[in-house]
Image (cartoon, rainbow, N blue to C red):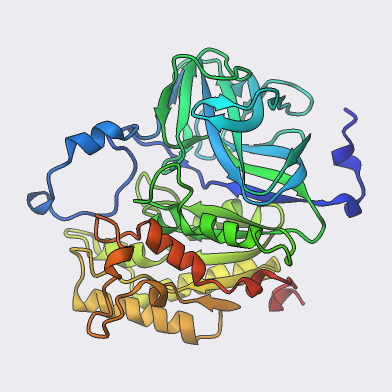
Length: 431
């Protein structure tokens, strides 16, 4: 194979992650699918809205058989070549992919005419994803401007193949019968909103380019934001950075998982931040900064009714977890930005004790000096009434009373000082 992108001098550019998604074990699909934050006891839960459920695609398919899966992902920074990362992270049997392609998105399940390029793996069109593997396609010369919607199509020839997924995809994806990886517009396609096996897209970018990895929970993941609007705050932050012509290219990858915790695995929703940090942050090319934005679920799950004591986490426990993640990032030269925990007045779990623990964590994030920088997402979203410190601004909260809506997500993106990302030098532990 004679591919200039693999042998070009460093002056030509560097590989950076321009898009990413953290992988999970697929769960059975449900109407209006996707995980939810812990809800009130069934007697107090609002009745489901059948009309809304009917409008929402199902959750991630748990099995794929002799089908093409087509997924849309927005590259946050541009480059002159592209490669795709696929993952079979969760111990499933090996998965054979016998055709794959990348293209520019047109609309719906359609791609721009003439934009499709075949993806190969070690020079071959077919590849087997081994159990637990994370692999890259061969580089393809391909002009990718910043903020470009790319389409990755994979043909899975076997029947009943169990998926590794990112469940809250928030971009419509499709399953279609047979091999339609090169088809301009899928035939007989079924929609859903998750990513299957697709875990990253990298571009060959200018030498000064870099990636910001955001690791977090459902707020980072964008739960309750408008599907297909690219509304989660990491996406809005990426758009702010792309608009700054005076700064080097800065990609932002969203490694949030709904229900995620710092310290422990959440059943069916993904490994803890401590367990997945190497795979979801350190292994991503070009990452120079990591934003750590989680910890609420560690508190929430401990206050759920009938939760065993082993699942309870105190503010001090969460801080220990933060310190381990900071140390791990610093040992690899990454700079770590801590994000304060959001107001939680909309949850039925709210108690004086829970609020004290949340405020303790936030005081430590702001005042410990152990993060390289801090962004105060609580201050950006809380009710301005000093008598309501645990409440999010009405115009920023979604119908579930907990998660920020599109406007709240935008407010969080606006809370970042972009100068944090202008210049990079290794974290103190690497100097």
